[in-house]
Image (cartoon, rainbow, N blue to C red; front, side, top):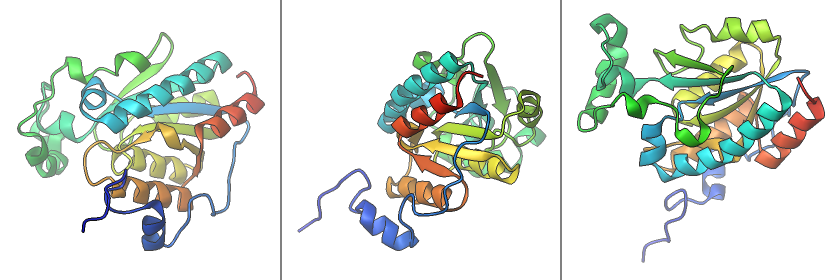
Length: 230
């Protein structure tokens, strides 16, 4: 008799926590600092259209964006990564694609990326004054102007949302941590996209354990309210 299939395949959250050796939200909490910015990672039309979990995260990100805009927070969006560099409309040199694209190409050969699918999903599209960064590797920090922009705004806290929890989002979280930012991760706003769903929760646990604070969206909104208008 087969076990019922849930959101993480045949694993429960408890199974995954036992495997990782960590229970969500039991590490030292870092919390909010004095000024926060929001980074939305790779929520393009292509992935929102293709993956139900990314679509669900987009709906929650819309709520988060509404609050961030109301408070006047600096807001950044990223796009780019494996699909863009391997099989897409982009006119990139072999050097720009690099080993990164060679490793990724087989995953995307049957679904070339179109220019319109590379835009941020309409329901959470950037508005005037919000920055859209096209990145050339997984992290929104690597080889981009993002560190300088964050320095300009004098922020010490980054609320990071988007996808993929096992790829670009996780890489961005790791670099934010290495740059010494306080990292806040609204759980409902994190998505994986493709791959075994148990891997999403493994990544969430790993990020919460040693890189940032994974929090319910309601608590993130409350924390931002306490910081007040920027």
